[in-house]
Length: 184
Image (cartoon, rainbow, N blue to C red; front, side, top):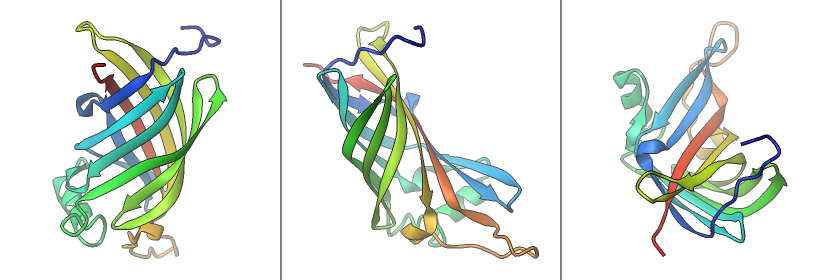
C-alpha cells in the first residue's frame, strides 16, 4: 500500500483477537531507562460504519500483567500497583473518535484502573484491513497514550539519592490490536 492510499474499513462489529493483539506499557525506571510490560489477557470490540471506526472498547485482566521477571510481575499484581485482587479488570471505552486523515485517529475515552476513571486520549492509526486465509475479515489498529499512573491510585515509589524516582509517574500505553469481524 502506498503512502497516499487509505484503508477501506468495512462496516461491522469486530472482536479483538487476543492472540494477535498486544496491550503494553512503558515507564521510566530509575530515570535512566524505559521498562516495558504487557497484559496477556485482553478482550474488546471495535465498531465501524460508513468507512470509519465509530467506537472502541476493551478490557484487561490485571492479573495477566507480564514482564520478563516473574517476581516483578507478582509485585505489579499487589496493592502497590494494580491490586488485582480488589480490581481484577481495567477498562477503556471510547467517547469520541475523530479522523485526522491518512488513517490516523484521535480516540477520546474513559480509562478505568483500580476503580478510578479518567479521560484518556489515544493517538491511533488504522494499520490494515483484509481477509485472512480462512475467509475472516480482519482490522488492525495501533495507538499510544500517556497517562499519569498516580491519578489512578498507582503511586508506589522509592526516592533515589539524586532526588529522582525509581518508577516514573508518566506511563506510555502502547496498543497493537487485531480484530475479527463478526459474521453478519
